[in-house]
Length: 425
Image (tube, rainbow, N blue to C red; front, side, top):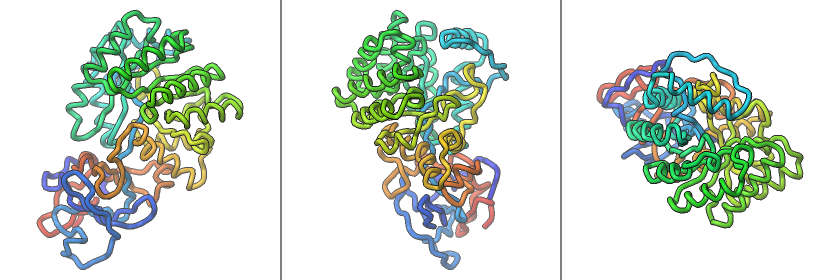
């Protein structure tokens, strides 16, 4: 199988069939495609060469048993913050969150590489690694105002045929404590942001009701989703989680609200955890984790209490964190390691955090590997889902809306010959 990501020949830019793929349930199938959608999934049968139903034509790609998954989903990124595409910047440690925010403000004025260029470098990497959809927070504050949003709106448009991008208007410098931020968030939603964010209503703004009043009011006004950063720990954090759940339930916003990080769920006792998890589950509030090195969420317990958990990469090579590869299967590995997920069933759950559960949290209604769904797919060099999470497998083929956008066959086969991922016929 090829290790190259060559640009595919135009005659194979939209394959009609993926031959001999392994599904997550272990079945070997042929997946038929048309008009950007999956038209049929049929059991694979070895048939004589030249039979069009085996994909032996110029529109076919043979996967030779490679694992085929729906496109990976990154539920939490910061495309505007990444330093990819810029010279390496040594990490500068800071003591507090406010110091880190101030340091980032200074760095973004010094870096000399536009947001759009850096975001493009990261988005290209995401696509190549099989991510089909990403939710990116973008800073909205009195310093940068809507400039980064406008840059990312342009990136979203340029990538619309390769990567679905949701944008969250994120008040990195707070909502209540920064005059004018509420108006900027309002403007951001009017100008193309998909969701409104928040930041530690207690720990940063010192006004839980004040921040949540603004966030939920603007979400209602614009018909937007909500995704709030919550780093506050302990019972201060769980109190805020229940406050968010209460507002979500009372306004009927279940399924449109997420809380990112929610570290408090990883450092309270079982009774407080279960009380809060039950409130989140009943309200339909999802929780995002990136597998933190401290206060790791008890993801299996949350799952068992009915809470939807999903994964995001968070910071990738930026002023907050010098690490990150944009590989969501690697992120599933990190979450598995941090959460002690070891059995095959647990590794399958880790994979769901970057596929099905993440897609549901992002509201991707036509996502999945089934007839009628969008043909956003990724083939990986693994025999099954547990191996895909544990083994850092190579991406072999990436499709977005039925078109090849990632590592692909070197060239199309001539008429009457199918092509496999080794470029052989």
